View 1 (cartoon, one colour):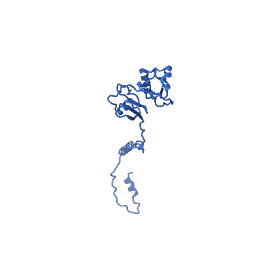
View 2: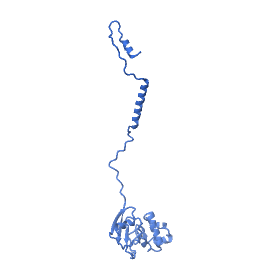
View 3: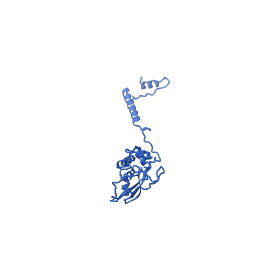
View 4: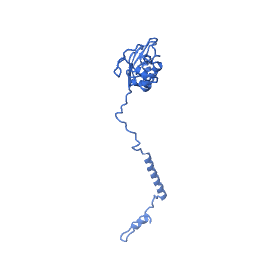
Length: 215
């Protein structure tokens, strides 16, 4: 029974009243089962698509922290450059700098003897670089600053040049170069006993040197 027939049945007179002559219009909209199914599929697809493109909390970029984390300042070394340079005095450089960097800051004179210096040597804080004139003799070894062991008049293994090292008994150019190479490869000497790790220095030579050098 259609909806119109049902309404007509409900409004049928009972005999006690007169029914109005009403003509019910036919339904203008009729949804076929196939159309209803297609509409449902479209709605489901739209809901699923919106769920995929909706931004989530996890995908939001992190909020920047405030105040920003402080960056660690690079370590520095302070060395002294004296002699035949235009700007003698203290030079402050970043850790890991070499003798060549200190010379560039001090500006050696044209007649300065740079060949006598190992420009590839790593700088050590507190080191002094003495730039001599070409043809001049190296200064005689005098009393050095007090070493870590408390001895006076010793040559520092951490600041000595090759020209100073060859003045030591039993140390030639090859041994002096080995002492400096060990210093550059392993860092500053922390004890005189580390000379035993240098190629060319045995127990006998070490006994002759240990009272003349310090760290």
